[in-house]
Image 1: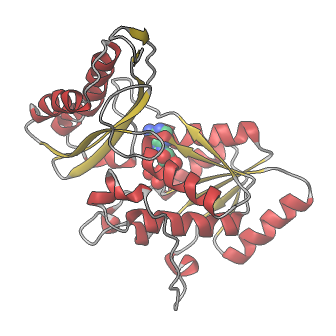
Image 2 (image 1 turned 90 degrees about the horizontal axis):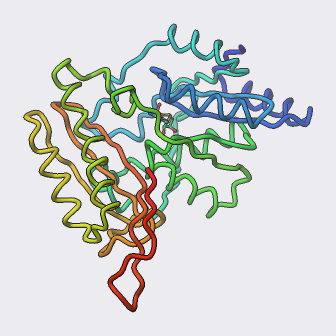
Length: 298
Ligand code: AMP
C-alpha cells in the first residue's frame, strides 16, 4: 500500500493508473475505520482494478459547535485495516493541502440540503459537496462508493455528479450494522455503556415504522408519532428530526404510497446519531380502499 499526502503525487498516480487502462475505485472517509467503511472498500475492490481510499477530516463540513476538534482518530489502526483490504493508495492529505491559503470556492447543491440533516447542520452539505468534488478531481476515480447510512449525503453527491456532468459512477452500499442493529459509525465510540444501549432506539424506531407501513399504515404523521414515542422513552435521547419523505427529493410526503424514506437523527447524550430505511408502502387501487401491493423493503 502506497501512502500519499500531496495532491500532485495523487494526481500523478491516478494518471498512471488511467494510462494503464485500469479502473479506479475511490472510497472517501474521515477515518476511525470500522466494518461499514471496509464493506465500501470491498465493493470498490470488487468492481474496480485499483482501490484508492482517502482519510480526511474535512473542517468545512463541521459546524462551529460540532466535534471537528475531537473527531476520533486511530491512524495506526486505519493503516492496518487498509492494508488488510488491499488498498492500493491511501490518500492522507493535510488540511492545508486541501484548503491552501486563499481558497474561496464552494460547491452548493441547492434543494436537497434543505431537508433532514441540512436543517440542523447549516452549510454541512456545502462542505461535503466541495470536498468530494475536490477529491474526485484529485483522485480521478471511475467509480466512487458511499454508504446509504448517510442517505442525504449520497443523494447530494449523486445530484452534484449529475448536475456537473462529473465523469464518475456513484455506487451506494447498504448500511452495515452491529449484531444488535445499531448502525456502525465512528461516532459510536463517544457513547458510554448506558448510552450505547439507548442508541438502539434508532433502529427499533425504524423497525416499528417498517411494521406499521407493512401493516398498511398510510399516514406519515402516525408513523412519525409512534417513532417519537418509542425514542422519547430513552432518558438520554433528544430528537433532532424524524421524517417520512420522498426518497428522491427528500420532500415530506403526505401519504405513504410506494417507496418512502424514513430518516431520523437523535442526540444520545452529547452524540448525534442518524439512521434511515427505505420502506415500500402499500399501494392502493385509486378506485377502492383495497391494497394492491404489500411489499416492504428495508
Ligand atoms: P465517514 O468516515 O463517516 O465520513 O464515512 C465514510 C463513508 O462510509 C461514507 O460513504 C459513509 O456513508 C460510509 N459509512 C459510514 N458508516 C457506514 C455504515 N454503517 N454502513 C455503510 N456505510 C457506512
